[in-house]
Length: 146
Image (cartoon, rainbow, N blue to C red; front, side):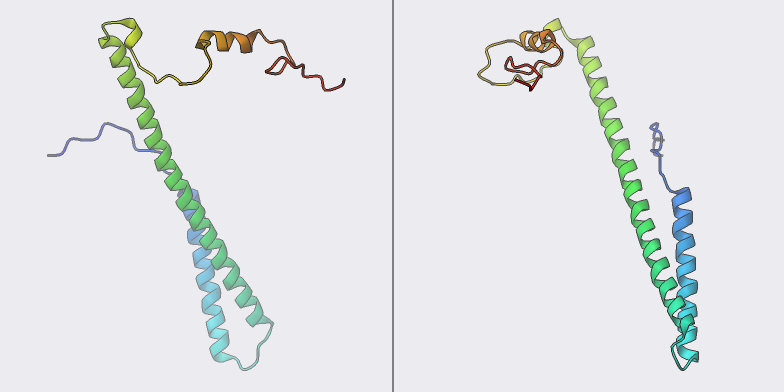
């Protein structure tokens, strides 16, 4: 017997969107059938033919666009759920690594940037914080009037 998955099902948008996709499909089917009836029973093209053709094309395009939007929303919801699971897994692993670490300085080893800058991270942050409002990096003032 398979174990039940304890993770919640991701939010799947679409009850209302699916309703409108189906509604557009029903209207498109109605317009297309009306157009077919007019074409096979009529002799000359009338305003009803134009109206049925315009309605058929419009509702078909609306149905397709709403269907594409629904598919994009669903795939985005699945990607969002996967991202949330990944973040929870990362935070849980970091939490357990912190609990199992023998030395406090080796909890999560992040790679350091290999730059020419000799300053440490605290010095870089303090130089940004120490600047006054309107000052730009490099010592220039934010005032452009000279």
